[in-house]
Length: 405
Ligand SMILES: Cc1cc2nc3c(=O)[nH]c(=O)nc-3n(C[C@H](O)[C@H](O)[C@H](O)COP(=O)(O)OP(=O)(O)OC[C@H]3O[C@@H](n4cnc5c(N)ncnc54)[C@H](O)[C@@H]3O)c2cc1C
Image 1 (cartoon, rainbow, N blue to C red):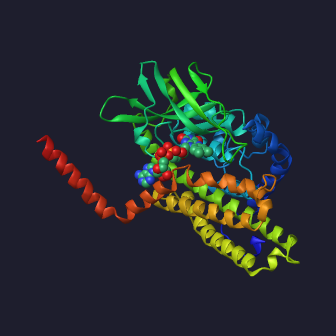
Image 2: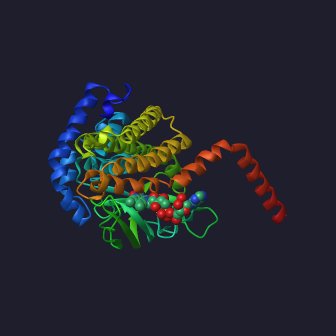
């Protein structure tokens, strides 16, 4: 098994981590495994499983105890993400709820918003989603057109979002919108929008290639009156807030990739020792041995980098470029490594009831969401070519100044 190859890790290694790991494993056996097929058919998981996660203390693990969170450091959230992915869990999308949406509220919300939403998120009574992407734009977030006009007592919100994880099951969404539409600055802001407000509509869960038991849908906003106090962070600074939080989101995707590769590798190691061809186990072929060695070795290298990123995040030192390296390289590896593993299952690897088939389908989106891997490379190269981009900016500025003179 991969564990026998794994070098000692300096994350998730306390007794408390081990207790959390066991809780996750029991949660998986009792609450998730028996329901997966039903959830796949309906396109979303049950409300009860969120409540069960809340009762076990698995929601908002790394958030402040003052607001009902676990009061633990980020490594516990990271463990939850990795272990869930190793087990093949994709729903409920705890990481989106606890490590992204709740964190926006804790880091940028007012005391009123923290008290109103966080304790109920910790118990699973409220589920939150994050809505940035629009039908017309995903990678270029500055081009969003959803807008909220200041009407004195409230924001009047109009627009739509798409591909929103747990959009269908969530009770509210943090929505990126422009609060000064039509002005040169336009001002991206973040509004917490309750799904029961008049004018809030949800599309049906999309039929997807993978992540079938986790809902992804469109959201429509038509003349919604959003209370003024539901602004998250500063008006017009939403883009900056998103850029500050995206490294964490990208790291969570990288951690998930590490867990998924680990799970796939273990499942394959088991399979190749029992399946026979030409009167010997598949494990007896050198090709099989080399493929497993390659996946195991790559996993080690990537895991070591991601473990380091977990520490960097805890120390508030995780940069956008480092998180981009982790996200792009682990998810690229996830798709190729799982493909390699699937090949060793032969035709059975293509059958949905085999976990490796689900893993293969689920892995594909990780190169797309949370910012595509191409955008990750844009961010990395911007750092490498910093001097070039500064000079380019100055040239454009000078050209503009000349044109307006
Ligand atoms: C299952 C799923 C769940 C999701 N969950 C959420 C969610 O919860 N919240 C949310 O807001 N969004 C969510 N998304 C949206 C996701 O983040 C976007 O799909 C992603 O950012 C890409 O945007 P796009 O689909 O508009 O692609 P586009 O921006 O149209 O990109 C199309 C292609 O062009 C490439 N491209 C674009 N710009 C450049 C460039 N400058 N240089 C090189 N190549 C470029 C892209 O890499 C991509 O290959 C989800 C998506 C999926 C599929």
